[in-house]
Image (cartoon, rainbow, N blue to C red; front, side):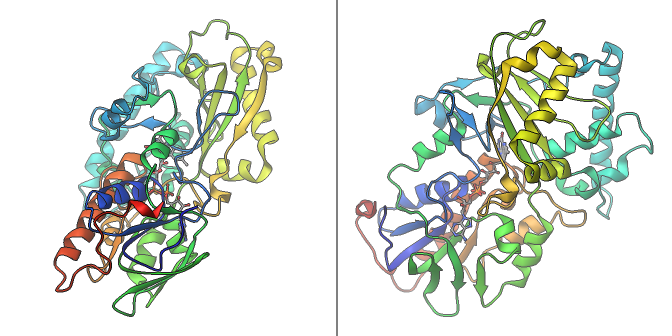
Length: 431
Ligand SMILES: Cc1cc2nc3c(=O)[nH]c(=O)nc-3n(C[C@H](O)[C@H](O)[C@H](O)COP(=O)(O)OP(=O)(O)OC[C@H]3O[C@@H](n4cnc5c(N)ncnc54)[C@H](O)[C@@H]3O)c2cc1C
């Protein structure tokens, strides 16, 4: 376990995608001493690969979204990861859920119309919720709402239009055979990460910032905060003096809820080619989306979000499995049931160091991302997916925000009238 240094030039709080990105950038400057303070006993945060059945399962981020623009795509390739480019069919799958070709075309056209309406509404002076754009009683409203719980982690009425349209998506999505979590584990190798060192207080009253951690106190000239908004808003980690703007911004950017249930599947699915998508129901808000035989593996990945996911988390894996098995047998026939068994599941809202899945902005709070990301006194810097202006809620958005915060911290150090606290030729000895 990395020892806890008593003083460093830059302390990074959190070893998720943002913290790893920040620490790698800082380490490129050989003269700056760095420590990454991580609450968990592992790195990666909301990117975490497990392999209970011998193949990689990503409990959190799985997809390289905007993969053709995502800086992690070439990095994964250069590190020897297998990058799978088979496109998902997220918008074209309703036929498999019992709908006609005509109904499926209507759904696709409606989604495009919604997307245009969102862009128009976002240009209005006042912000509003995505739900305000629905036709009352519309046939597809429940599915639009379910889709919002998958994309935003929250129902349409909770999501800001202005924030939603700022998200940039190139439409290209790739996967890593070995898992996104394993990529970040590889990227964290050699970094000075102090695990099980949860930070409870950031005391920035003096010239050196004092960080109280579960393993003792560290002082730093600069601090990069990458913890989820939930940890700031719920004051699991406090600032002294308090930072009311950050509290309000973090509360305006809550983490939605999205979870996964992984099911093992013996044999083929009659009538279905490998690696397909389907939604459990086109008429209910409470439904799951399914990846069947992803990357041709003997498995089904189930994805669900919003209030429905929060309720299922409380009930546990057996109830999640029963729900998924019920939807799948309705769609694929009862014969499939005896070939399925639960492999693993997630409960991100109950995870004490995440307390949710990814951030969305409440209506009226789209500009909170900039407030959250703004440095304080050129000494406290902020990163993490919620700080990303256009790639929020993603691993690459978090990664890029971490690099930007590291560059800002380095620039501020170079403006010091005195040298960094502890200049070193390099700080490789720290791990
Ligand atoms: C179910 C699910 C599916 C997803 N799917 C995708 C996807 O397909 N593609 C995609 O790009 N993104 C996806 N995401 C989102 C993506 O995982 C996150 O946006 C990204 O990983 C967030 O990185 P981060 O560094 O901002 O935060 P985190 O990963 O949360 O990192 C913050 C770190 O801080 C630590 N920490 C918290 N509190 C403290 C404290 N007090 N002291 C010290 N350390 C602390 C945490 O343990 C954590 O390691 C998904 C997320 C979930 C949950």
